[in-house]
Image (cartoon, rainbow, N blue to C red; front, side, top):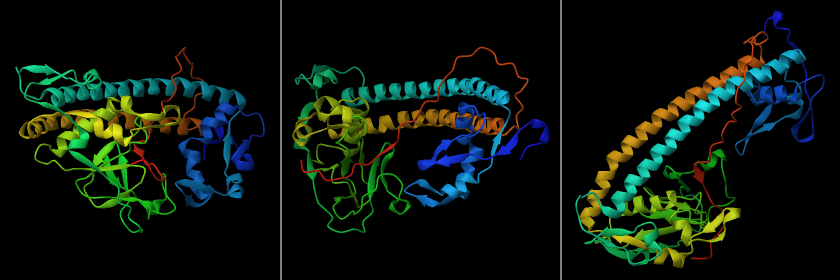
Length: 367
């Protein structure tokens, strides 16, 4: 696997129950930790597996024991750990700066959309103060020809249990409502979907169980979703344009405006939006032709923001691939670091990324 002049020898790593590694010999545990997580060793897991179950490797202990592990001299292990800490920290710092740019772009987009949704896109108009004290904390004034109204006057909550399986299962994600691939067994799965509720095309579905990580979307197809979610439909189509209110409700998640109206145990990720509070929630009611105008004005802003973020995410992906390759090549001796002088550096830990999909299971009896 490597040339003889590297000083690396082939050894075995024994395993104890639940794949806790019992490392033999003079091995730097930090070296072992970074090596076993690297691409070169993870690639062995498929060979040591009896298949994939629920999105995870179903590993065979006996075959795991047969994976060869390359063990350089202890001094070189120590040097590898320092070298990778130095180089990976530099890459992590750059990735962190790119992610910060994404946050700034998203915040600027939210600010502009917030202004459009609450003030419209027409300039030099008279404004009036919002009368509801709670609402005024995030929407202090609106154009004088707009009205304040309650969600319950225009939308109606639905709860229709499917009663059998066979329908597409829909998940609410940060990228919209998507059909779940239940055949893959990945993510949160239910043992039976007959208790799930219908969502019809054009209806809203929201994860109101967790106002921190939840989201909302409009269904484009017939399907079923968790009974813990809230499904509701726009009934007042004479005065309300669904795409406008989708943008408004999504903003209420992103800016945690709904959060102030929740109840439950926030520390346990269960800060829910009770149905009565939802129906009483105050929304702006512009003339419907202006709602359409606002939506069309926001589209180019979203497109521009999405392009900027996509370009940055591509750079992050490239840096992540570079980091993984660097680690794999270093722990296997393809990169010789024995004579490299390590300067002083600031250690930067890799930031974990939040999941984009949220899917609640169980039943909701509170509607």
